[in-house]
Image (cartoon, rainbow, N blue to C red; front, side, top):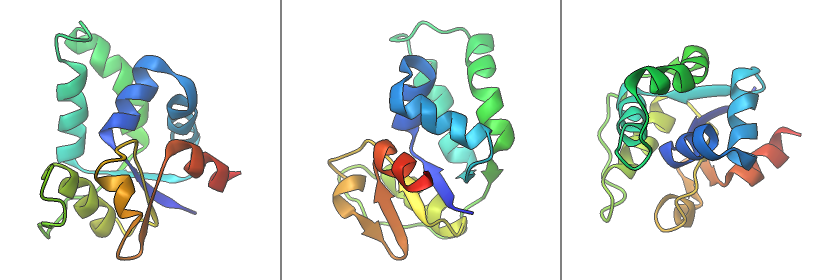
Amino acid sequence: MIRAVIDTNIVVSGLLFGGVPLKLLKAAIGGHFIYVTSPVLIEEAERVLSSNKFGLLKQEIKSLTAPLFEVAEIVIPTETLHVIDRCPADNRVLECAVEGDCQMIVSGDRRDLLSLKQYEDVRIVTARQFLDQLR
């Protein structure tokens, strides 16, 4: 079964706006692939969702994220990577994928993560590309 990290931008987009990112999250919840994340990535998603821009209460955020985070395999990266200089937070995604022995990272970050296309043995793809792969 495919092991994959879902970048925060996809998680937030799926939870709040639907579309292809939501289909991806439903595939994770449905067990169609192994969703791998880390405490740092969970905290980042919760921090983004709690921004004033979205106006969500803490309980609403927990209700939105609980089904997804309950099925996640949580890893704690032991190695710190310095691959992406422009946005160091993106290195946390790479660390999670490496520690979690993932085949893929799913992201909407065209500037940094998607432009890499691959890091070591981990392919970096869009939500659409990932869903096509699952079919």
